[in-house]
Image 1: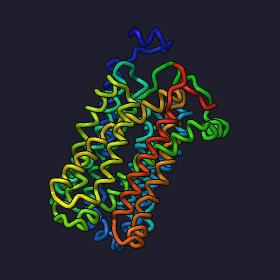
Image 2 (image 1 turned 45 degrees about the horizontal axis):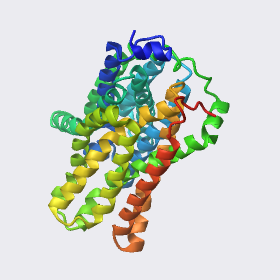
Image 3 (image 1 turned 45 degrees about the vertical axis):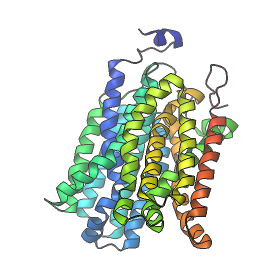
Length: 407
């Protein structure tokens, strides 16, 4: 047994080969699940043509899928804390299978909406499990392991567009989606054989019920964390929806603007791993908060970037910030609030994220029209990101050497 195992009383060896297997399977699942949901723009036209959908209907499919992915996936993650992970992941695989089959037979907008909502629900549940389980299997390498796991979130948008285009050159949308979801389902079923919680506090926590949830949300520190957490990330969702328009308004060529999100995502793949190394050395919380400050500064700078050099520098900075932000939040939260019922804790935060991810991009449009440009919305975005860092930092301030358990 490792020193960590002996000192904290866990019943299983941490930093073990099984933990790294959990990481490897998590990367594969995240690459396909996150990549399928968040490369929607690549196949939106094919979806519209296949099912004769209007532009508004296509947009609503994406918005609802994203909201369900975060909110309902988080809610199911809370209930998943009551059960062993094997049947939960098996149910996820069944849900993904049904979603793919529905898209082979439905012909209406409502049918498409139902299929994608189910896809988001199953994918969000898996996401909640993946990001909450990996930190539980590690002690010395917790930051690195979580960072490596979260590279799947960056790899998905990088790899899946090429897979979609390769399939579209050979077959139609229905078959293409069935192929990608089929591979996803196979990996989920394989993962269900190996995904389990390590014996110890994470399995011996309180029962997750309404009383437990009330204690969590009434905890001022947890409430501050739950509000600060999505505020730190709203810039990503806003830029996902508006970056091309922001950059072209600044006089940047449309081709350069279209590659903006890829620059952020590509850089973040490397900084997720780098952030884990740095976090394990200077502290995960300090690394996270420095990254949040960097994201705030870059968001404030973006409306004033009128040359390619400044644009690429700002986007590079956002990519550097995104990596540690995306990979370190989970171990920070589980260290602060305890690994007992980790899946439920992460589920609550995903529900909080869902509302901000839906509303923040919608608020930018009216604010732009009211002020005549993107300067005020982006300055506000930078301020909100800094506010989120402050709330998250206060909420996750360590209390002695013991996590706070729902008080």
